[in-house]
Structure formats: C-alpha cells, structure tokens
Image 1 (cartoon, helix red, strand yellow):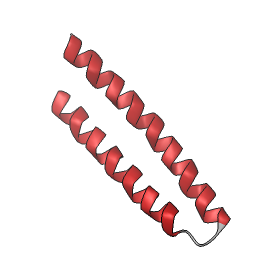
Image 2: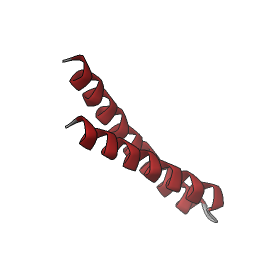
Image 3: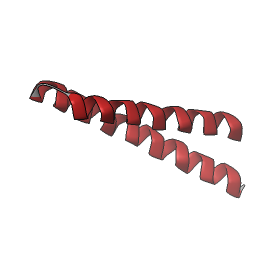
Amino acid sequence: MIELQRTLIRGSEKIIGHYRYLLATATSERERERFRQRIDEEQLLLDRLRQTEARSRAA
C-alpha cells in the first residue's frame, strides 16, 4: 500500500511540474488561469496523499 501511495505522490508531483512549465509558457491569461487552477487541484490531491502516507507509516 505504501508503495502505491509513493507512486501516486510521484505522479502528482510530475503533473504539477508539467503544469508549472505550461503556466510559464502560456500565451494568454485564460490559459494561465486554467493552469493555476489545475495546479491548485493537483496540490490538494498531493497534500491528501502525503497525509495518508504519513498515517500509514505511523501505524
């Protein structure tokens, strides 16, 4: 279970990195807003995954 969570965490980190790159190269404010929104959504997911991983390790 912990290995799966680590894989999901790494995936979320990569997605955030990709959207940060897209944000840096966006050509319109509409694109930038969409990328910021996606980064925020993925960051929430990443935070939840990290909390779950920490609880699993403590158990």
